[in-house]
Image 1 (cartoon, helix red, strand yellow):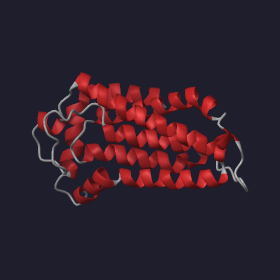
Image 2 (image 1 turned 90 degrees about the horizontal axis):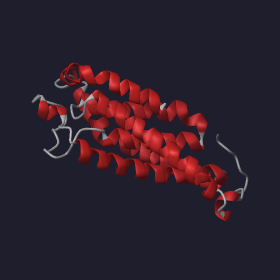
Image 3 (image 1 turned 135 degrees about the vertical axis):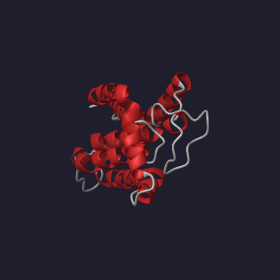
Image 4 (image 1 turned 60 degrees about the vertical axis):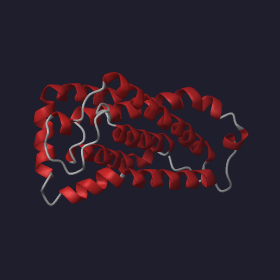
Length: 202
């Protein structure tokens, strides 16, 4: 999935301005603007809250899957820190500043770089952690993460390739961290024992 997202991101770079303008200018000033702004600004909290509820359920019912989710949480932090480092190296200006158009959300200040999209990184990394812990949730959290990520384009603060790259980084980082750390975390007694009346979700 990370590879597919990366290839899609690369494919959109040559047409980045056209794609961005077609989306951002259509939404800005339309009836979709307020909704897009709400989703882009606050929607990530829904995914975070959902992950918290899932963590509580797994802690009570399936400690092994809880361990996967917890290790995935380390990957979420790693993905975010990685995206911040990449931003400092690449320093791509926000499209709303580079192209100077009106957008749904206020354009971030100069120095708040565009690539990759932090919101997309976080959305994809949370979704990946949830799916690795409870695979059946993919049909819920994957579309939710995609909507949250692409809402950043609709409100004018990111290019399409910013969002796709951010999602790729989030998926890849969480998957790698889980593969590397989960075997060690699974040895912890608190995670290796079964909870009472275990009911695995995955």
